[in-house]
Length: 169
Image 1: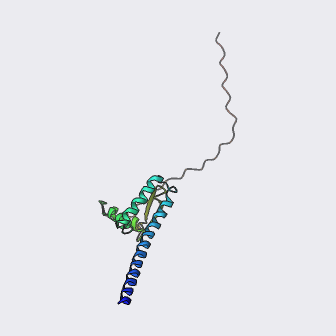
Image 2: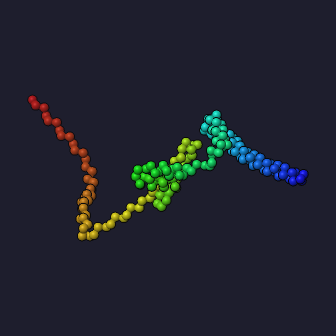
């Protein structure tokens, strides 16, 4: 009986040790993230006090199980594209979010920390070539006379002034 009691106690200690190790790993994992978030404070464009408050709030929310994962930014952006009134605008918005499709190419520049993300999409539209008109329906060409060549006049002396009339007596 003494041997059974000893093995039960050892088994309970082993299970308790594994549970506490798992709990410590989970806490240190989030604590590591908290330390990383704190190390960023003061090196970004956010106020240091506000950054520390946000890191603490995130740590507290994670402890409650409220932070389950990263938000789905793509689904959020596509949902906003659904608010466009015209189908063409909605299609263009989705092309910017998804990175382009077909004859549309998209690019993203900037960052949130830099002040904003600029999304641009360029759609290439190929215009059909104009159809030539049949000869019998073609308008008559407009003829414009060419100006005659000008030949420079020979150099002539300037005209002399007319003599003054004689005074009357």
